Image (cartoon, rainbow, N blue to C red; front, top):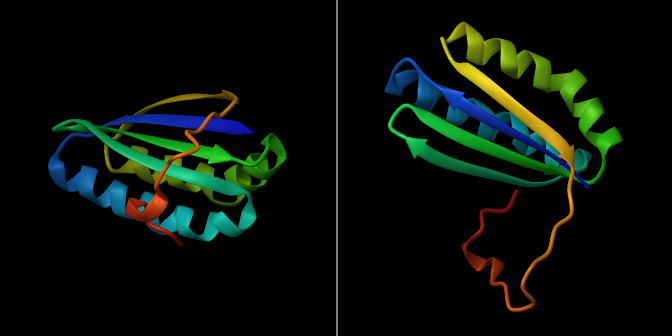
Length: 105
């Protein structure tokens, strides 16, 4: 698996809400292209973290070329400052996990 973590700082709340909506709409399409999980966390009033877990690096590379670079450009255009971390990932989950509270696309 492959993970990408975006930490984004915004100039204002409107920019933050716009980027969150954009992220959600863009990643919806990627669930059929190797995206396994998208996590969003509000880390402060003017920042958030988006975590994307991909089936493998090659699936991510295709998505990055098709939509990721444009997404990053749009965030910067809105005044967002982005820090990106990524790499191979290992995932463990509890056997008892209840997915009923998760959104599904």
